[in-house]
Image 1: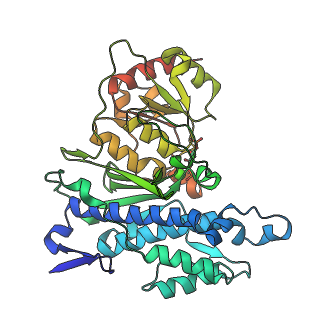
Image 2 (image 1 turned 60 degrees about the vertical axis):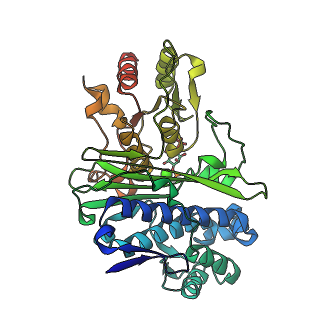
Image 3 (image 1 turned 45 degrees about the vertical axis):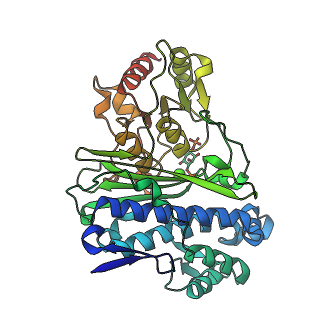
Length: 398
Ligand code: 2IP
Ligand code: CA
């Protein structure tokens, strides 16, 4: 028996026995993340969508709950698309594919619409038109992007070896951040990225993040990161880049190679949010040297900088990130021998490496999205020696 993925002309046939394997799940996530990146690009490239995206509503319009917030619709559409296609391939995961956004919307006429991906492009366009207060042009463009097949992206999967692990899809859950660093996505500053350098803000900080965790333990075991705006091709079109990693039961594979160890005597480099507490900034500036502390946008982008070896540590002392921000990049760090620990917990223990973030349990004392906050802050690292050194320094701060 065969199962097909994506019903357009490029569909691939996956033997049923293989569908349950991690390699098959990874392929699906890579393709759906590329579809998501494509929708994110289309929203900026097509004028009718771009106008909605950057529109600041004023006066009476502010009361039109939906139209003032097209950026949230873009997020919801991407999240629902990922949920739809992954759920279709792995029905056992259906109830455990969660994300940042709720899919209920109210349009300017006060009608409540649940945003879903329909069986056909025409039906999806009709549904989006209802949300978009009858804007059929924008609805048709968005529906087209949702139903379009992505370019092939799985060629990096050739050398993964055996990704079989003793878990079935019914034991897994998924966290989706449809567009992390939304503010950078809306602002849209275009940067030319320099190989080997961290670039603090701009469109490249916007990332699609899809992380898989074990429902029983909350360990992040697979992650896909798609950077929709990595570089512009000679025709001026944005092209993306993707990264993935798997770490489970002794199986470790990653599209990123472990960065070379820095020369002896090289100081640690930390990346922080610009809103980090002064005491933490100060402690890390003394440890790393002021020039080795950089500020960058996007929680996902900062973790990606650690994955790529552009920074040794991302330290965040507050609970301003969520499970959907960290699950995917955490899986890549684990695949490379690193991890993400709870900042507060790691300060209080002699074994900070043991305070790894988990992804399966809500903080029931919190409300709404805050149930899924990484409440104690976090420290992302590749090398556990760097983690230990930073925790020692942070423990000494006033
Ligand atoms: C945000 C986004 C912000 C980040 C914040 C995340 O997610 O990544 O950039 O703040 O923690 O929750 P900062 O840049 O200060 O690290 P989103 O853009 O999806 O809301
Ligand atoms: Ca986010």
